[in-house]
Image (tube, rainbow, N blue to C red; front, side):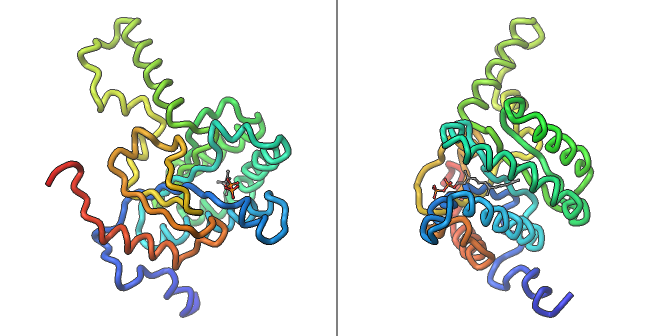
Length: 249
Ligand code: FPP
């Protein structure tokens, strides 16, 4: 390891290691605009977006963040031009195949959430393989929301609970937040402490609606492909300057 790479992997001195977010969620917005500004096809922005995500995952791991959840494809994204949707599905599959070995070496546990059954069969197989092979890894939990919609997630949780009530295995009086959360995709990952959204939009875009009730939101105008360690550092400084009260005084 060079002196430079050692320095990069260390938590910046102005950040308090005891007040880091345990779980960061990211809305990786602005790939298309990044490409357009350079006269490139939109897909080039997504390709660069993968590099940014990889760098962000490494940085979170180096700095001691225990979970990163990325919004890769929403239930609404099927409405994009067919060639862009096909490119993204192929990209996810290629990236998984290419990065699996490194995720194993780096002790990354990968997990996919969303309506995965509607994804192309070959991608579903790659997803299952990567989740199975990394399931005992410990350094960081990396969750990719794919064909994910927050409202759809809540509806499917309601349906699962209603089915249990109908079968007589659950009493309606027993339904509380803890029971409900057991039916969400994030049962293993928990709620994010910090949401980072790039490219300036002030929206949740149907992402982790239940889970983000008390998440701190940080929005930057930077486009996702330009988001780097310095930007993450800024986001973490902003987070540590916040007073999280969870509804108390
Ligand atoms: C939003 O930018 C970005 C996406 C819909 C795709 C993000 C996906 C990746 C970066 C690949 C992740 C890969 C794996 C395997 C985890 P946009 O197209 O909405 O940008 P715009 O708002 O400028 O049009």
